[in-house]
Image 1 (tube, rainbow, N blue to C red):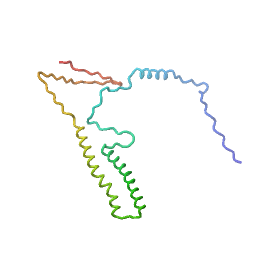
Image 2 (cartoon, helix red, strand yellow):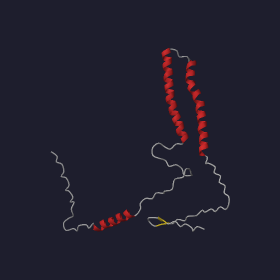
Image 3 (cartoon, helix red, strand yellow):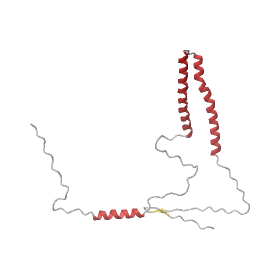
Image 4 (cartoon, one colour):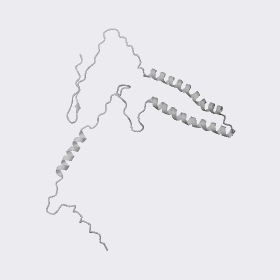
Length: 177
């Protein structure tokens, strides 16, 4: 009969007799100082200025489906809805032909070509209207301002300096003339 080997002896968790106990007061004081510094220092900053309506910054990809242009989304929606419509029309045509017992190639051609013949001009017109609307909405409005008399323009330049581990901004505005 085979015997299993004896398990190894457990390691002690307490300090060995005669050894000094580790002092954790210095580490606790250091952690308390860090927590005090973090409690008084600002950790976030929000820019209160509104975001521009348009500009050169590209869009940021969001989690989920990959980013697509609005045109690609519109075409994708059109394809999905057209495929559902094609299945419904094809199923109805198949049911009618099967119930009547006649499968005339000319009638099948008319049934198959009718949705495409109707959809192409409708899609072309809707795209034309949509593009015209986008062009009108994308153009910024023209603003004409007419002044009579002396006009003073004040366009200050702001110089900012950021220094330190936690940067603090000190803006220096020039004196008004």
